[in-house]
Image 1: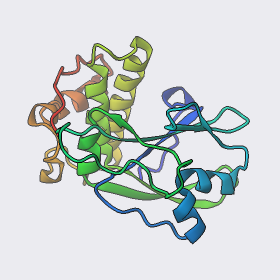
Image 2: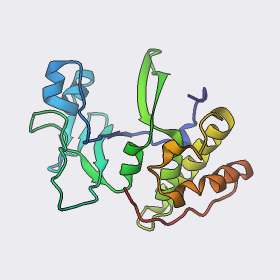
Image 3: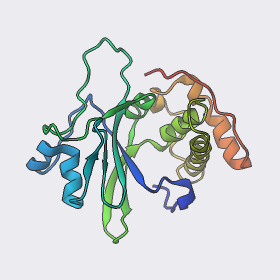
Image 4: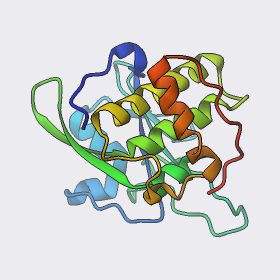
Length: 211
C-alpha cells in the first residue's frame, strides 16, 4: 500500500499468523479445501506441513516454518463458544484465543497486491494499518509480554504509523471507522506519530482489552 519494502529486522521471519473472524463464514474456492481447512490449504503448497502438538493450533513444515491460527478471546465466557475451525476435518487447525484481537477484526480491512519471491502477484487482506499500529503499541505496554517482543512491537508501531502519516495521508487516525478501538488507545495516535517524527521512545498506554 505504501510502495516500500520493510527491512527484515522489523519482521518475524519464521512464522505467520492467520487471524480467523469466527463471526463470519470463510468460503474457500476448492471444495476439498473447504473440508480440510487450513491444513489442507497449506499442504496444497507444501505437503510436509503437519499439525504440531496436541493443541492443534499450529502447523509446521520440514523447514520449521510455523503457521498459527488465532482468533479473538471471547468477552463473555458463559456465552456459546464460536466455531474455532475453518474446515470440517477433525485434523484441521483449531484457532487459539488471543486477547486484544477483537479490535483488529472489528476495524476496517485493507487489501493490497504484493509480489512474492517468485515475482507473482498475490492479493493480501490484512487489518487496517492504523489499527495494527495502535494494537502493537498496546502489546508493547503489556507487562506479560516478553521484553524482546515488546521492543519489536513498539518499533513496528512507530514504523507503520510513520508510513501511514507520510505515504498514506488519506488514512487518518481520527477516522470514525476506528471506533472499535478504545478511545484511550486512539488518543495515543498523536503521540505515536509524533514519536515517529522525533525517532524517540514512546511510553505505550497500559490498557485493559475491551472488545
